[in-house]
Length: 315
Ligand code: HPA
Ligand code: ZN
Image 1 (cartoon, rainbow, N blue to C red):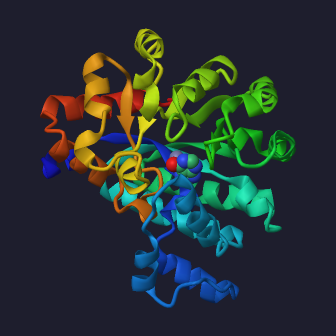
Image 2 (cartoon, protein in one colour):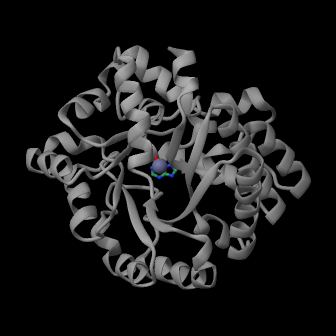
């Protein structure tokens, strides 16, 4: 099964570039940039990566991202991920970045976008990996701050395909961001949003009805609303699911509980993704392997999931 998964060309549609920061690079950049991190060594880091919720992860994830200072740092981070893509036969990527995590520390938006884009362009030449970039708004911050970020992004509009919505879901529903998503759409961006990871099915409905998103990131809790299920099926609205993330953040207790197989068999356009692979214990192929084993997927189902990843992409 492992070789079969490796052999299939795959697209990854739900990947936070800040979530690919491996401990080794974190230490290297912390030293270079003279930034203190609360870990003595790599074992210490691994020990800290025990989460009981989305928020417990986000606290550590934002702290980790503080070592990223220069354009070159973003280039290096992105290139390491793209080398992994090349190893795993990932031929197309749609990558999230969180500009507010960096602009709030005084890093220029330009440096973030240029560093990431430089690596993406190089990997397209070296490995033939195609790409789009998705700018995510942090939903624990205000809509005004998201609008400010949207404005800052406009000179770089041609580098960015879509806007997204991530960070702490509970208490920050899509309805909080209706205006900024409308503005983004008017500026020519496509739209996606995290919904139904910890938030209930109403968050998914709001993302569709109020933000008019093309895809739902996660969508795990869609089964709570049968009308929504019918709609997701009829309109073939993609769900970018992240099995190892769901396990590590305690959305599920055991991988055997994951609903991706049930949703696939019901006829939804579900896809497999790694979310924040440096924190959740596996890149894309490891996510496929985990569900293939725990849910007894057939080869045909795995093939369908990889085909779905291209269907659901912005290609
Ligand atoms: N959910 C919300 N925000 C995030 C995630 C996630 O899974 N990963 C990185 N930021
Ligand atoms: Zn995510």
